[in-house]
Image (tube, rainbow, N blue to C red; front, top):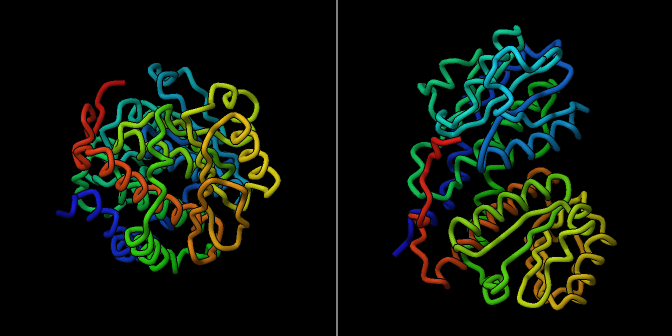
Length: 341
């Protein structure tokens, strides 16, 4: 019997295709108010926080725009944070995440442009914002999010394109890429025995790949119950690698920002510590001396590769959850929306 989680993985290409035109107009409208913005401040939680990290790297690379992640607990007093020069973004699929309203209200009090990325245009957060970009993902029924993450990143990529006033390479073809990736991943076997590590998994990436690593790690924790952490490659090598060893597995997410030498060093050092290693990459990146090599069989623009690798990570989570006999769609102990801080 097909799970809801698998159905939602398969649906992502069609959803991106349907939202492309409507989303493009909304992001163009939102971008009009951002002419005097010096930096972006983004408020988000959970998978939306990983989408914010994706935006941080994409906007930095494409626009030279500094993107900072907001700390909502500092916005309880709406006069305490100074937002001179900021354009403010809130990302919340439900529009109900705690702390988002305070950030947007602070922006409005200080006359700063703001835009809400949400799947619920009638939520309190959406109604508070100056501009709204809808995800158009439809109801997401599985606890672990799939299509709201991909639509958030798609909407943010459209926003970057609108701010740059030129077409972002890969944006038009992304729905087809996601369709092909989902079909390929769901028809292939993955090294679930390596991923089912008794001491857990560590997922490492860099740049766009770090945002991907964080989202894959979250999906693995939610769907499988396996301890899974995410780090940028430099941060991992700086210290956390010391806590890993026998019984743990390293999953390396390879995007353009991950130099071959760094990937090779990660694999070598983790192997020395008794870890098993898995590489997740596209065909344009070389293999490494890892225990398993997962290669997406096509090449694409780097930011599109990031979203394609997230889809592979979703399928890996599904297969590992099935191996462990987990109730895939309900993610025990979790709720779809967390309403506490």
